Image (cartoon, rainbow, N blue to C red; front, top):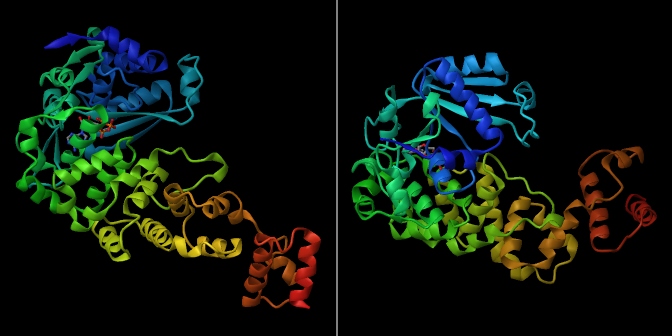
Length: 433
Ligand code: ATP
């Protein structure tokens, strides 16, 4: 059952990653708690891809193990008793303590430790009920054979592949295969996961698995909460092949099931997601809990939809308010753009100030309108020297007049009517007498 891939394993994880894993392995041997590296990392090591996340499963109490590690090596732990998980977060001082002479990565490193568990579903589509169990059961709760492999780490087993469900054979044949026939009914988000892996790696969904994407599974999908469904799209927008993944979701009837308004969404425009943000246009912060890429993905995907359809989708998929605002703002701008062609910079600026910058950037990616570029790189940051404080100093009573004066001064700068601080002072004198 155990196959030895330790050479490949050592090559793929060489350096400080390997050192940290060896250390965890040593401690797990001491505590007699078998430790495994599981899931995506195993698949990616076997595919020769870069690995960033580590999921570790322990046959034992993860909280006890994490506490032990922290006491000995420092860092912090977070324990989630309900899910039987613990996270060990390490910082630069842990590296020093362990004599790892490598620059510490840019962001803190974390290792997720989970006690081996099995899952059952009280009803289709419900969140699973978790129970402590053996490691073999832990693999059986997973989505696909290629994600149900593990490298054992403790003792003499270091680097040995543990693959009771023959995931490596499906990996060789480039196949995505579920572990049992109720898999998609238990958790229909796995259908999106299948599509993501298939498109990301150029694999096929194995025919029997494909036939399980049927009306029964779609029926359960239709019942899932907006947050759970939206999260699947969020993950797609992080992928290089986002547009083909959404096409495939459409062909398999998933979009129609979630909401027919999604059928009009434009997956081709997502190719613009691949465009690197143009540095001189500045940094754009995503509004709310989504990453910039995810927000941009939603905006581009829904750009051509009517306001009504956007609102319906936003409601079904529980969009955060600011995401809805960004998508609505971008769609309206995109639709009206042609009618702004003879506008002055100040008109553009005051219009564009009303919507999130990321929405302006999305429309720029699609239309390459130079005024949008000028707005992002210059106009949005252009402000007069005069401030509310200046006006107060000049004895003006605070009130709506302040905004009016500052807006006129800003417009004059934007439209090139004033070019120096002195010219601004002259204009201000004219405005307030
Ligand atoms: P990615 O490269 O997309 O991050 P991953 O395989 O690391 O892929 P995660 O979402 O981080 O995916 O999940 C880690 C592991 O947990 C998976 O490899 C799989 O074994 C298991 N898993 C995650 N989600 C599910 C699910 N919905 N059903 C069953 N198993 C799951």
